[in-house]
Length: 89
Image (tube, rainbow, N blue to C red; front, side):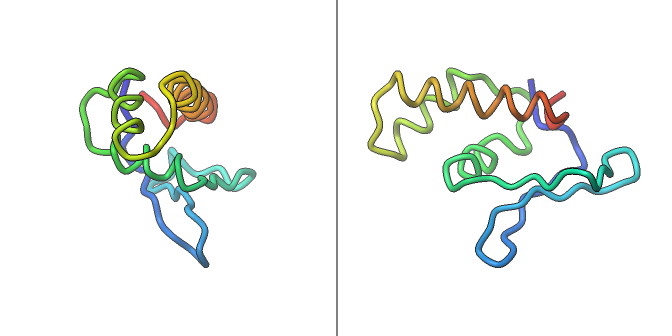
């Protein structure tokens, strides 16, 4: 899986927000806001042709003081949400 083209992360008033580019991605009924960890994962995943839950979990473990099971669950939850709202291809 990978992040679809046409989306970018911005910081607006201290909040991490995903913005879309192009008419295909516009849906003004939702604002996509990310917490600090999800924004970190986004930055790690964006631009890569392929991302995996295992790769992002390892990256999260390197960057944060968190146990492997918590990191795995957090990554799975973030990827599931991104898939649900159409950010993944």
